[in-house]
Length: 90
Image 1: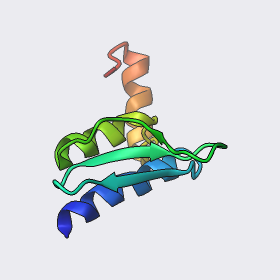
Image 2: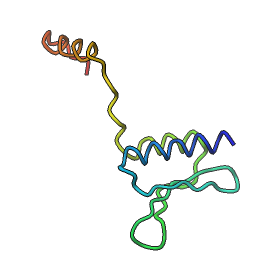
Image 3: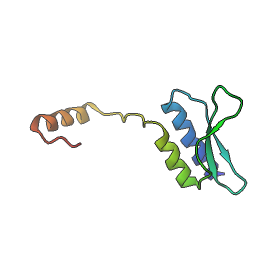
C-alpha cells in the first residue's frame, strides 16, 4: 500500500504545480505505474511506459517545473550579499 501512496503523492504534487491539470496514475497488475493526462477527448493520453515506483516518481517530478522553495529573510539577505560580492552561488 505504501508504494501506491508514494506514487499518488507524487501525482498530487504534480497537480499542485500544474494548476490542477487532470493528471492521473494507473497501476498495472505487475506493480508498475504510468501517468495519464485527460484532455478534451474521451481517451486519456498515456505519458510514459509503465515504470517501477522510484522511476515513476522521478518521472512525475520531472513533468512540470518544481514549485519555488520558500526562503527566509535571512536566506534572501545572504543571497543578496553573495551577489554584491560577485560570488553568486548559482
